[in-house]
Amino acid sequence: MAHTMSPTAVAILLLLALIVDYMSIGPNSLRDRLAFVMAVPALKEGFDGSPADQKTVAAAGGAIQSLLDSTGGAYIAGASVNAILGVAIGLLWIYAIGCLLPIKSSKKLGRFATLSWPQSPLYRINWKMWTVAALLGMMSDLPNGLVGDLTRTLLEIVTSLVAPLPALLFGAA
Image (spheres, rainbow, N blue to C red):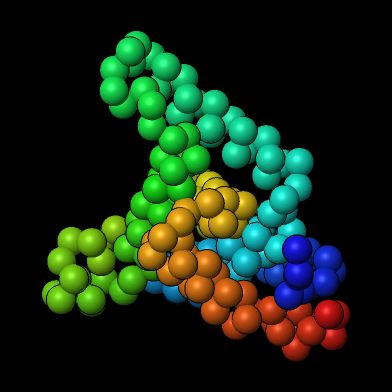
């Protein structure tokens, strides 16, 4: 697997995202967006393919398989766990995009653009946003088809935008 950032850059970017979220740096409308945009590429670069990633995918796949098994002999029990997991991650990306869109765009996009993560008070981590970022960072390679291509392309674009930040801000690449 080719990496865009060094391990040091990944650690710095992840720390920056945590600090931006924890200390509520910037206006509420930008804080979660900025932390999310830094966190997802850092988590992708740092943990994709790791034992934590493998355990997360295995746990999610096991939960889906147990749900399929609980249907008994129903036709749906033959569904592919990997395809369902990929669809779930694709839908999570759609939810995250809705949370990242500015509220002003709701005039054209409807209620989808009004999705948001709950606001966390000062010196608190927005756990819902971090959960979404962690899942998307580690599992964005699972969706297939057009949605999979779009998620990987979005992640590559965001990674290329934030990868130079550690070197620019701290001189550490």
